Amino acid sequence: MAEQNDLPDDEEEIDLSSLDNEELVEQMHDDLYDGLRDEIIEGTNILLERGWGPDKVLAEALVEGMRIVGIDFRDGILFVPEVLMAANAMKGGMSVLRPLLVETGAQTIGKMVIGTVKGDIHDIGKNLVGMMMEGAGFEVIDLGINNPVEKYLAAIEEHKPDILGMSALLTTTMPYMKVVIDTLVEQGIRDDYIVLVGGAPLNEEFSKAVGADAYCRDAAVAVETAKKLIADRRAAA
Ligand code: B1M
Image (cartoon, rainbow, N blue to C red; front, side, top):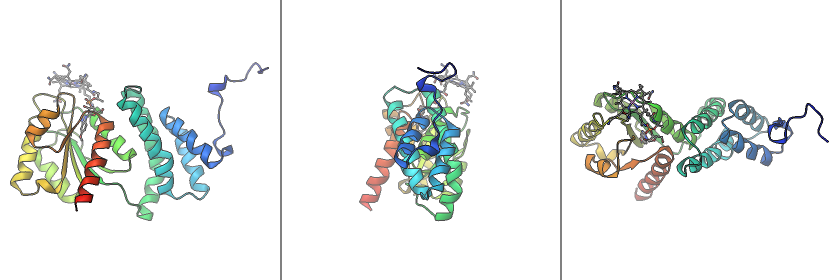
C-alpha cells in the first residue's frame, strides 16, 4: 500500500542519474514533450559526464525529442503553448551544448536567416519556427521584427545562409516579401538561397506569386521543407 505522502505514480520524481543511457534518452524525449527545461539541462549534463559527445546528445536526445514534438504539433495533438514550452526546454539543453559544439566544430544541418518583414511586429510564429529549426539542428540567425530589405541583404551577405525565411502576419505587410525577393533577383543572387515564407494570411498560391521556393503552413512544415529542399539542392550539386 502507498504511504500517505507518496506522490501518485505519474508525479513521482525520477532520479535521472539512476537511469541507463537508453532510459535517460527516452525520459528526455518525454521531458522535452512536457517542456521540462531543468530536467533537460540535467539530462544533457549527465550524458556529457558519461562521455557522450555534444553532437550525439544533440542528435539523439534533443533533436529526436523535438522531432516527436514537431510531428504532434503538425497533427494537431500539441498546440502553440506546449510547443513553446518544449522549445524553451530544448533551448535549455542547447545552452549547455552550444559552447561545446562550437569548440568541436560540429556540422549543423544548414543555416537560416529569418525575420519578420518591414511594418510587421508579430514574432510569436517566427520565434517558434526559429526554435523548431534550431531543434532540428539548424543554425538560426534571427533578425527580429520590422525588417527592411536592406537588413535581409546585409544578413545574407554576412552569414551566407542556405535559407532565407520571412514571416508576415498582416495582409498589408505580406506583399513586402515580393520586394525582398525582387531585390534578390535584381542583384542576381536569388538562386543562391532557398526562400521560405510563412505567416497566417499566406498560402501556397501567394508564395508562388512572390517567387518564394515554398510556403510553410507551420513550424513543423518549415523544418520538413527546409530539410527536403537542402537535401535536393545538395543532391543536385
Ligand atoms: Co495582431 N493581428 N495586430 N497582434 N495578431 C493578427 C495577425 C490579426 C489576424 C488579428 C485579427 O484581426 N483577427 C490581424 C491581422 C488582420 C489582417 O492583416 N488582415 C492583426 C492586427 C490587425 C494587428 C494590428 C494592426 C492591431 C492594431 O494595432 N490595430 C497590430 C499590428 C502591429 C504591426 O505589426 N505593425 C497588431 C498587433 C499585435 C500584438 C502586438 C498585440 C500581438 C503580437 C505580439 C507578438 O507577436 N509579439 C498580436 C497578436 C498576438 C495577434 C494574433 C492574435 C496572434 C498571432 C500569433 O502569434 N499567432 C493574430 C490573430 C491570429 O492569427 N489568430 C493577430 C500564433 C502563431 C504561432 O501563429 O504567427 O501564424 P503564426 O505562425 C505560425 C505559422 O503562420 C507559421 O509557423 C508559425 C508556427 O506554427 N509561420 C511561419 C509564421 N511565420 C513563419 C515564417 C516561416 C515559416 C513559417 O519562414 C520560413
